Length: 548
Image 1 (cartoon, one colour):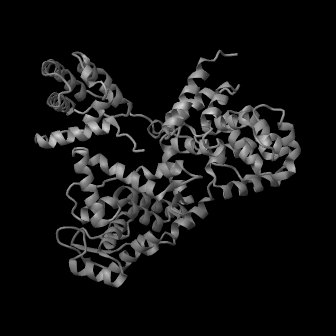
Image 2 (cartoon, one colour):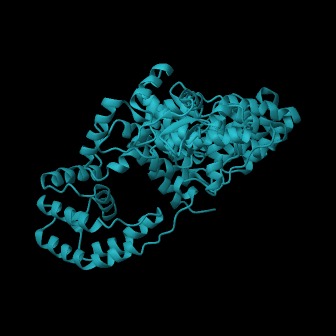
């Protein structure tokens, strides 16, 4: 079955064709998308006088303020274009368009004054990222180990090699701080690098202070910092590596665009979102295609002045000629030692996690560091579990058990599981299952605890019934924080295919305090429309049930 086209996207596409046909090259399509979404793409025929005033003076500014952005002063002109489009396509009668245009003319001065005076609140980083103010604790190696990792970065070593090749007082181009054409070719030949590699390494060497440019004449020399690297103290090593990471994320793609003389793409700071995104996905990582998608989304922001079709042509032309910018960025991050790629899944290295944590903490997000494994409480271990891979979690549990009896550990974990919410229970049980068969007695005792019965059956090898599956599904969805991918995975893992509606019917009747919310999350996020609809119906029944 072919997925239906999203009505907003279809309208924007149609509007883009209309704009091109009518010579509206300056139309702001991002503003059009916002207007269509907020005014209601399905009921634009119901637009009446007063709607545009309310949108321009209240709803739209408030929505932009929530993201710390000023309203676009292009919005009134965008609305005029949209009204003309709806009139030409027969979606709005001409007389109503005239009334709406008159209204627009009347409120535009007040709207522009509002834009000029805008001082919207800048949201904190947690709000921007959609995460709590406190994230689970993480474990990092000691600073000396992190610094040792920083010193082994191949990309930094390559930038240093170019700086050392420069030597003393090598002439630069008269008009800038670049190598002369002859020296550029000589460097590429001597070091075995491409021209784009040389441009990238030159900029990185400059950022890291490996090049010393003369103030008196157009020459450059190898700096003392380049000679010293990597034999520097730990603090300097980590600071320099952090500087390299910031440069690669924010500027390396832009250097490619400049070097290749791109007409429409600057790709400035397109890698910026990757560091927090990858940090938040520790324990499961991000597919390499996800990195490319994130870069594409960031690049699309600077193409918003183009129609969607024109923007896609620009992007596809770049990829065809120069390759995927996301993959190029990923290659540089790998050479820097910031990421590891295994089976097409990208994760941050410890030194990159260290830098990411610093940035997030500076942005007001609390991210505790874990004590040594043997000193952790059960609560700390459970809180940290979502950020570990399976191998890391197993190692943490082994180390944790060196200071406590397995039976005592099981009781501690299962007490947490019984008292916590669905997300906490899921991870407490995951950790408890790491204890193996030596704690069967504790699992048998858990059969008498309603919140733990399903997990106890699983641990003891007993087959679950529908109530057990429904309870575990609610817990799993609760732990996903509304994210579509893990919600769909939880449904597929817990519910036998084709029995989703039956399990949802069981779920809403359970005395689980989060049943309604979990079913609503499935209804909102599950990609299968039939499954999502069944979940929404069950969520409604749960919300209508009398409270005990």
